Each structure stands twice: as C-alpha cells, then as structure tokens.
Figure 1 (tube, one colour):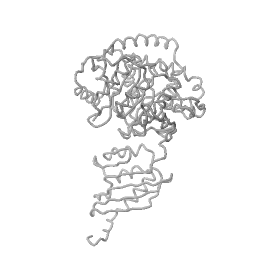
Figure 2: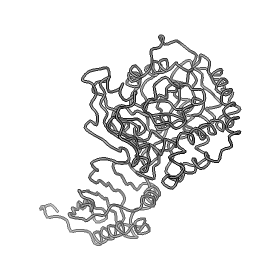
Figure 3: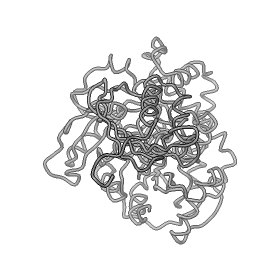
Figure 4: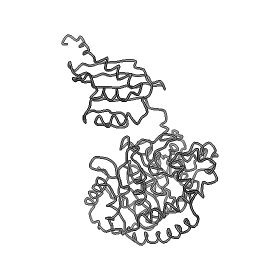
Length: 505
C-alpha cells in the first residue's frame, strides 16, 4: 500500500508455510515434494551449493535422513502480489545456534508452493567430516623458511608429535599410542615454516578411492556439491579445496591423492616411489605407498616439492604424448575436457600406450596390494573386523583368504609389468585421464567404476612413477583432471612443467 501499511497476507500462505515446517520436522517426503514446485526451474541452495529442479531437490531430501530439529522464532513476509510472496524465517536449532530460511512462494491452482529456497545454519566449531583434530595452529612451524605462512592439513596416517594416528578407524584410534615425534615429511614442512592446522580424515586404513566415510561422515566436495570427494586423502583435499589450508599432505597407493584432486579441482602430485621418506607414516601396501600433496595452484605444488623432494638435475625437455587408448576409457565429458586442454597446450603427440593388458595389470596390482595390506594389519584387524566399515572389512576378509602361491605369482608378474610400464613411458611425459569420470553422486560409485579407475591409477602405482594431476573442468563446470606421468625420479620435471600450464578457467 502507498501509505506504508503492510499488505495483508494472501489467503492460505501461512497455512502452507506451517504445513511445510511440520512436514520437514516429520521428514514427510511426500508432503515436502508436494509443497515444492514441480519442474526443472525450482531451486534450493545452501552452503554446499544449489540444487536445480524438483527431482534433484527430492533426491537430496530422500538421502539426508531428515533435517536438524529446530523451532521457528521469527517470520517476516514481503508480499510481491496476490500470487507471490517472500517468506524469511529465523530458526533456533535444537543442537544450539540459529539458522534462517528464505522461501519464494507462489500460488498455483493446486495451492501455494515454494519455487526457490535458501537455507543456512550456524556452522559447527569443527567440521568433523573433514578434521579429526584441529588447532590455530595445531603445530607451529619455524619462524622463517620457504613455506612460511603456509598451512597444512595432515592425513590421519602421518605421525604428529603429541597426537595419535587414527587411520580413519575409531577402534584403531582408541588403541593407538600418542606419537612422540612427527613423521619425517611433516617435520620437514614444519622446519620450512609451514604450520600444521590439523589432522584430516582419511578413508579407513586408506583403502578406498571414493572418500565416503561411514564412521565420521563423508567430507564435502566444495567444487562438486553433494558429490563424493574422492579418497583416501579425502579430508586433506577437502580442507585445501575449502581454503582451510593451503597444502593437503597425504599418501597415494592406488590413486589416493590423484582422485580427490581431480574430483575437487586441485593440483596434486604422487611422488616417485621412495622419493619422499615414509618414516612415521602408517603403511597400507609398501610396494606402492608414496607421499603426495594437494594445493590450489601449481606454484605452491612445486615449492612443497622443493622442500620434500631430493635434489635432481635441471629439468629436461621431453615429448608429451597423449595416450589415446587410455583416453578412450574416460566418459565423454572428461574426454572432451582433456581434448580441449591438449589443443590449447601445443605440441602434443597422440599415440596409444598399448595397454592391452590393463585388466591384468589392475588384477596384479590388487592382489599384491591386498596381500601386503593383510601382512601389515592382520594382527590388529583379525579380531576387530566387526569394527570396520563393510567395504573395507570385505577387502580385508578377501585378503585373508588369498592363496600364497597366487600372491607369489602376482609378485613375479608385478616385476615384469613394472619394467614394461617404465619401458613404455621411457623419457616421455605421458598424458592420461586422472579418473574416468567426474565425482559421482553418493550411491553411484560402484565396483565397476572402482575397477576402471584402478586400471588408470595403478599404472603409476605399479611403475613407481611420479604423477601430477592438472585440474580441468567439463563443459558442465564439474572438476576432472588430466594426469602427467613420467619416469621414476622425474618428479621435479613434472612440477616444473606444471608451473607453465595456465590455471584452469
């Protein structure tokens, strides 16, 4: 009204609002679906990102297990016209803190429905999906050094003096001793001036590629909201992607640093086998285990390498080869992103990697990895299988049943395969998809994807090769990656090359 008197509330609006609130608290999915406008234009957004379309919103509600308990303490309404109104509600959460929701309601023939909504809640003091323990900082680095003012998220496999190693397992954490000294890689970062912000979550015993965690909750993926973060260096990668830290320190056995980097839009390196000391790092499969790290830019990726990697000769020039047969394993959107990257780079040779035996390589890798994981952890795991998540428990159970003769034959094949892979890489830099797909939605990550992914990631694992993930984006804006692989010991060559690559758009 022109005299400043508030417009009267449209009939039925507040009844619909309270129906929605009751349905939310009851987790009445049918009622919630009815009260949100059908069709592809309906929006719901929160700190994790925006859901577009009624179907996405409905699927999200169906998978979250209900909303936090709350009480509405204030409602403000701006009437647009007789058929449209903006409702802003302030809520108090049962767990403490306040939240708010802003909803655009529209009157339709079937009644009032929400066409757009924004939800916010007070953040927790610590996101325990990302962090096991955190400080400000947890450990202070040297006053000066090449990494002064940088911050580190340490994967929960590395010893940090005064803390336990939890390995992503509550049972393991409970029995673990307090470490008296930090892992060598952690100490070198501290000596270079970096501060350790905290100890970040890992998939249980680092034996996963997807990053989901039934014990503590799955770390979020800031650049692909509501999709999996990638594992097993999931917490460290998420902390870096969120900007909580500038460096995510982790390990890579079968892709554990490369996968989360590709799915979260980060730079990363899996170092050559034994290039960085693993003293004070809980092992999974020592034949393949390496130290690695993630950053948000290539320059810092290389500067961390200057601290952790051994000296090497000046970088050398090499042919860059796109492995066409490995590229063919990627989904069309990832393949197109890599093709666009290659076109913009310049002189890249296209040639097959001749990976005709890729499935056999993966099988060999899996057998040796499983046997070594059982050897490392059988004493602890054998009587505690019931404490493990189903997927990891199943892997340990399968490892316990392996035939020693079969494992011995796999170890022999591994030696031959390692030489074969190194021969094919030679003095070239080989490009291949880091992962075959973008980050999947929870529930869509199945054994088939795991096997295809391991087929790609195990090449560097078997060969003991350094591998750098270059972050790319698909046409839909989702993160993916291309991997630069070189001969053992050429870590610094890859990092120097990465510095010349323009940052992803």
